[in-house]
Image 1 (cartoon, rainbow, N blue to C red):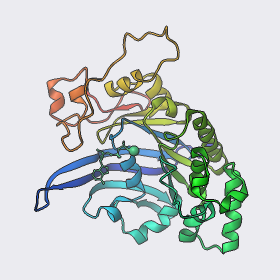
Image 2 (image 1 turned 60 degrees about the vertical axis):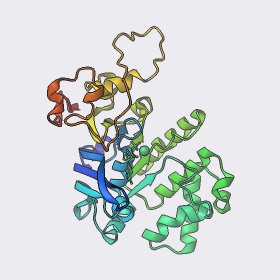
Image 3 (image 1 turned 90 degrees about the horizontal axis):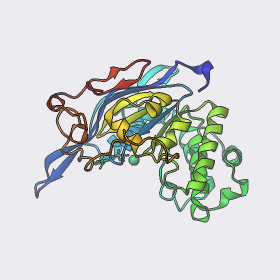
Length: 337
Ligand SMILES: Nc1ncnc2c1ncn2[C@@H]1O[C@H](COP(=O)(O)OP(=O)(O)O)[C@@H](O)[C@H]1O
Ligand SMILES: [Mg+2]
């Protein structure tokens, strides 16, 4: 993290909820609600990398999509609550559920890198067409200017300029993800939300792409939200880490705090699942999670984790636990941690 830029909040998410109605029966009545994101709050400081980790289905992608306001246009009856305040020259603007035309200038400042470089690039467009897409929408540039900028961006992500005229299928997974990164950089954004950007890549390629992202962060002063299901990936690249479970943040703190000294029983369990490099290391305090993550359509009352929690008490069924500060900003949503 660049200390010159420390402590300027770029994004302030407050009580964000994203609930999808579920319809059933012949009359398509509402039969339930998927509480994909269920009241989460966090901030992202300018220049930092915030990791968001959790099992599949915990709501990580939904958080990312909520910040760039993708749900309302795609799912008009989605239930949105809370605020996602993004810092602009004109002050904080709420990206949660605002109309499309108001979102457009913000989309220039916030870009996303997607998990699957195979489906996230339009197969019918050349690399030139893919990368200049956001420039056409957001920037007033001539075709020649766009062409030159695409060349610069390709070079910056480690690809040859001649690749601009090729199509996505001609590239490997790692190369495609570099194209996705170049596209995300096209409008010179402040914030990049990277949704499991290396999960679909070979392990040998993952480090290269992560190193590239770190170099670009330095060079352009980027702020990242880095989504991953693997704590060991985010530990090395993140300043802070948020741990999600069933649409809630269970713990948030510095990477050091969450990885080395997790306090929430769920974070402890997630870490227990990380393979230990040293076979002699003590595994006696490992927590193994029983059973599967419940569906967000039938979330347990009170604490969402209580049905799998080794220290759950009867009272955990009564109320959703408040975040509490365990010292030095390590916040934990568990009264018994
Ligand atoms: N459009 C949608 N309609 C209904 N349910 C959804 C929709 N999008 C996501 N979900 C559900 O919300 C939950 C969280 O999904 P997601 O954010 O993709 O989790 P993650 O990225 O952590 O794997 C999942 O149970 C998923 O099935
Ligand atoms: Mg996801």
